[in-house]
Image (cartoon, rainbow, N blue to C red):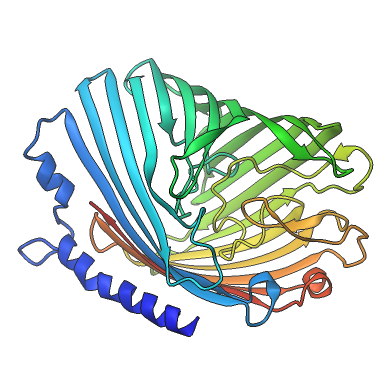
Amino acid sequence: MKVSMRSSLQLLVGLIPVMLAMAADPTGGVNHATSPSEIVNAQIPQWVRLSGELRAREEGFFGNHFTEGNDDMYLLQRVRIGVELRPTQWLTGFVQAQDARVSFEDRVPAAPPLQDSLDLRQAYVQLGGESHLLSLRVGRQDLAFGEERLVGASNWGNVARSFDAIRLGMHHGKYRFDAFASSVVVPRDHDFDKHAAGDNLHGIYGQIDGWIPKSRLEPFVFWRLAPSVVMEGGSRGHLDSKTIGIRWAGSLPAAFEYTVEMAGQRGSWGADDVQAWAGFWRVGREFKNLVWNPRLRLEVNHASGDAKPVDGRHGTFDVLYPTAHDKYGMTDQVGWKNVNHVGVILEMKPRPNLVLQAKGHDWWLDSATDGLYNSGGALLVRDATGQSGKHIGQEIDLQAIWTPSKHLALGGGVGHMFTGSFLKKTTPGHAYTFPYIQLTYAL
């Protein structure tokens, strides 16, 4: 691990001056840099636009599975190239290729979600757009709604997520509604990515501005179908679950802001009845009169768990297809399932292009007989007897993001998780640490 960590860090550090040189203009500045795609776009017809992204991230873990010595550091690389065709104002075509790879790894597989060599990430045709009353997008595409706590592109991930979907939008004044039918694309390294037959997500997502002063309401309904899920008794059955909820965000006097998101789930998990719910509440304030314009936010999360493992009722909240990184801790060891969470976030801007963050988290299981799930919704550990308690642990996160130009971003941070009584009794109980440094260059 030490050899691979040193090699990958050397490679990543070596990319910094290269990307800074690419971002700098001939006069020596960086804020007015011209990217390769902008140079090409200036020479080709206006109805053809090229875009792209280069991203490299050194990341890893110390104490994986809460076990001392289970450590690894590796280098993630991702390249995206896109071509947009817009022959008229009402017709758009877009194709995006992606190559995602992992290098210098010891304990993680060179496979999805870390690696998916050259493949088709997006390919769609769209009629209409934001300036039209109606729009229709058909093909492989991103789906992202609200803060992406339930449906998102998961762009932090090296491979990320896309859907084969049909999406119909209506936009009029303060109102917007999107209806879609989709199936998530399953990445397959060295094979063409396809969606899984019968694994579907359909929904309606709305945006309503102005009903409540200085706020936005976002009602939604998601309908998830899957051909095979594990029921409480261990056998498999068909999933048919509806998630109904609303997101409400706005501002208050004295520079306060707030966000509320709540969702309930009903349906069938095989022969089991689905009865689950989750909520998110956040209040914050920006102190513009203080140096570095600090912003302080308090967050509370709840997601139901399954109180009785064999009662025929599925009470664990289903996170669907979220963009969940850093929403419940940078280490991503805790997700929006069977959890009660309190978080405090302090954000400062010493310069307009430099953001510093410090976060603190504390978590408890909602049900002691259910388990701990990570940010993607995978079960990490469970004590069905409920005798290991509920306290998961605490976490401290530090992060910095610098954008020296409109094309270049450099970020880095570290998250350290202290295990609580539940993890100390169900695992070796070692602390978990996640460090990273990332370079992103928009071509």
